[in-house]
Length: 116
Image 1 (cartoon, rainbow, N blue to C red):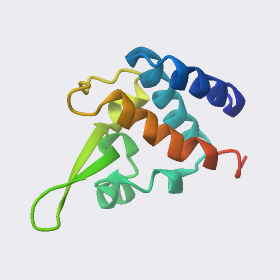
Image 2: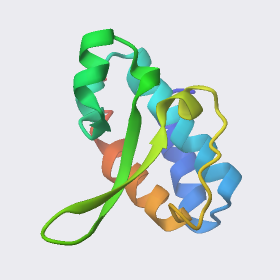
Image 3: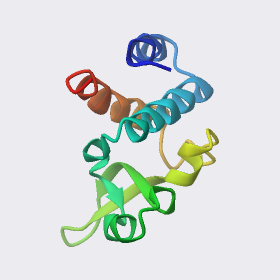
């Protein structure tokens, strides 16, 4: 999938989002970023130290969103990179909503054409 196709898919997902279409777009976007070596767009990947030292991005998790927790800490909501790379997200919508997934795509997708 190229960037123009992803942008078109994003507009479709904004109008009529389904879990399958949003998850598919999220997977394709992450795979595209990795294939183009734009890893700086994945700055919110956990644990980054492990990924840097082992060079296995599939061992990490992509931080989709965070919510305030206690004492100034944040609760990180993540999707395993292994699932994103395999086009098979098993994280339930109760954990990371469709809206949170779309918001993540909306933040990242406009950055991609700037570097293409």
